[in-house]
Amino acid sequence: MPKFLKKAGLAAALVFLLLLVLVGIRFGMTISIDRWLTSSLGNTSFSFGDGLMTIISALGSPLATFIYAVVIAGLLYFSNLRIPAIWVLLTYISGLAIGQIFKVAVGRARPIGHLASGYAFPSNHALTTFIIITIIFVLVLPNLSSTSLQLWFGWGTITFGLLLMEATLYLQDHFLSDALAGAAFGIAWVTLWVWLYEKYARVLHDRIPTLQYDAI
Image 1: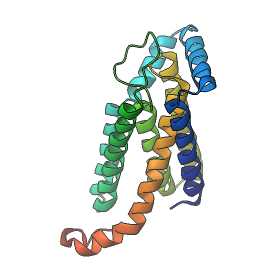
Image 2: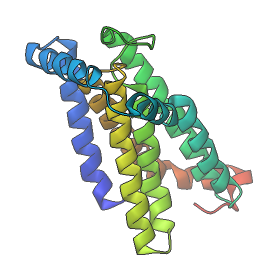
Image 3: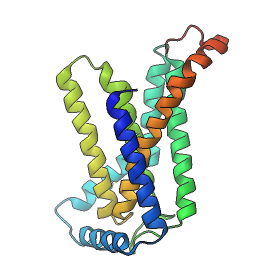
């Protein structure tokens, strides 16, 4: 596990739990800030704003991020890294499933005027996008040969994640706490699954005959 991920994962888990409690108990200040910020962004349009935010939202949708996960898993699979490939898909699918359980359990309504259906907390867009971003930081960036490429690609993915969170507010699909909770949960969930990988990947490698010649 990368050293940065331990701290980031723990901090993200604490942020998610705090937001879960505040939103769950309908804490007044949190609700007020959420409504004010979403309303302000929703009423502030700019040239090409609607189109740009819609495109960013589409690129960060659960369907799009699932495609990214499949692409990453496919590249790993055909590089004789089937265990990491399975890990990527299980991390993504389980994270989205648990996030949906939280959605139903909290049962928070979306902002007034939204176009999407379903509950708001946490944001699936932010959750799945930050699952992919964290996987990229764990698996992709360390294997890029150029330091400058690592830097640009890393900052590019983070920038997209922040823009995606802004898009969910701009389009009035979510409140700020929904987007923050989704991002925090995504980071924390990948951290948990990195720990599980370190603990059980060798066991799977040694006990499943078809995987014994795979690299881990």
